Length: 243
Image 1 (cartoon, rainbow, N blue to C red):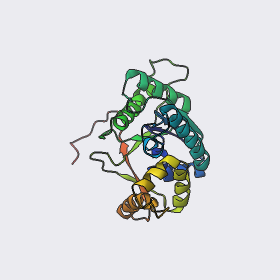
Image 2: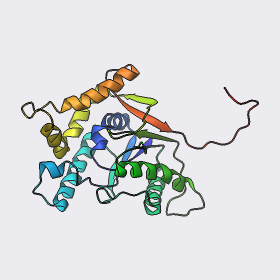
Image 3: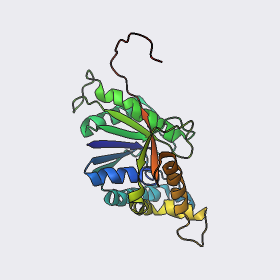
């Protein structure tokens, strides 16, 4: 199976959905990650206030390369949009739709589009919209049209009205998930900055708490939540309106 992941910023691939991606990669699935923006205006501005924007971009890209090795990702692409400047434009939809045709994923994972963060909101909606670009046969690109069978969304802490209906049990890969998060040194340093500086592992409680909560909701120890986006289906007549 092939999975395409579209995220606004790199660290979500580790902190929010890392366990799910690790499990799919371990099973032998091809996981392809598309990052729209390096996220250079995030934790790096707190951890390294003296570094330039260009330097922070390079650090983020190096961290993402390290994550790919830990998680076993098939490919990682960074589109290099500027932080806070992601917009759901025809250009972005065409770019993502063309990538979907190239990758030919069975599943798309992206952001829940109802979010207070504009980068996240626009990235998620653009990725969902690009599914139409991918399947639209009249639109000719280098690769043939491709239909993505299922779309799953995830949320970050700024999500709005997110009610998951799919939960992935990640209990057996939590240590591996932490290994992936540790690749993002700036993210870990930021979490330590806002927690207990005297306890080097206290930051892990943030991740454990969220994954444990969803685990309790779904009957396992740790879980990551997703909400499926229903794709249009063929019309079918029924005898009566279903109750």
